[in-house]
Amino acid sequence: MKTTKILYWVTTSIICLFASTAIFMNSEMAKEGANHVGIPRWLGIEISIGQLIGLVLLIVPAVPARFKEWAYVGFGIMYLSAINAHIAVGDPISNTIMAVVFFGLLLTSYFSFHKLQEAKGK
Image 1 (cartoon, helix red, strand yellow):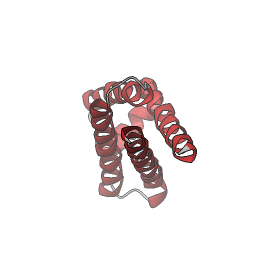
Image 2: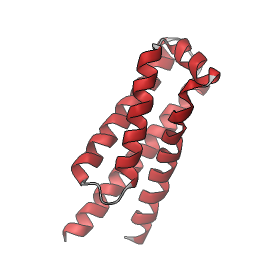
Image 3: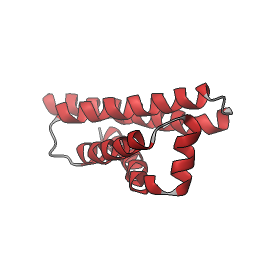
Image 4: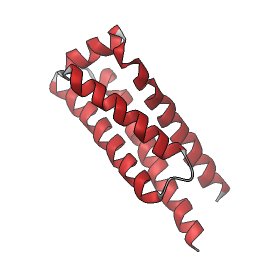
């Protein structure tokens, strides 16, 4: 149980730290990256707002599990869309690997969250 809790908080913290960089979507590097994969500027702003909301939902323990589930769904769609976008524009695998890694972290966080929820229910 202790290992599951540590795994949950480490993976969730990494995801949230990465999501907190959404504040920097106005940087030139972020704009160029979004342009490269064909994301319009307005959608980049919406993604940033969604990441910040998801960050709060995942990191605050008092948030009900149902809301956390939707945050996981949102992050999952975002990472899978990033993988798809990089593949669609013909990027090398090195550009896609970060989205794959973060999707793996998200899955680890999700499954450990459910293990903790099951343990609470007993």
